[in-house]
Image (cartoon, rainbow, N blue to C red; front, top):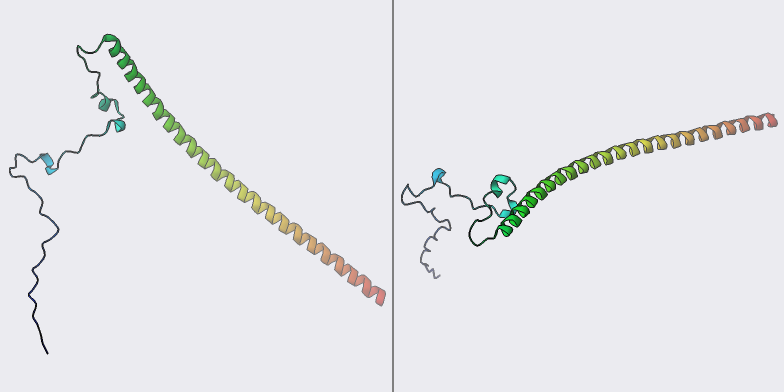
Length: 146
């Protein structure tokens, strides 16, 4: 028997890297976390956030262009307010529609239960009447035979 000894494997390095630390405490932002990236302009909805994007003033812009930009900015604000109100209205209408559907389903179930109960009752009444007629016929036949 031949036994060979293989060289022992070296331990592999961990895939987890050590966190990079700031060299000086002065470089570290307050709270120890970096600042988040700025929001895209499409997500800015409050007027305070939109104020950052004011109309640039300078010699290159004509007064007509500035007034048009102000008008467009005003229109944008009005349209955003209208969109918000329309969203609220759509949400309230959707909620009322859901409630209406629930009420109608409940009423339909009640009516179906009533209809099924009455159809069962009329079926029972018909069977009871048929049974009475059968008994009367049996009594009549017994009288005729006696």
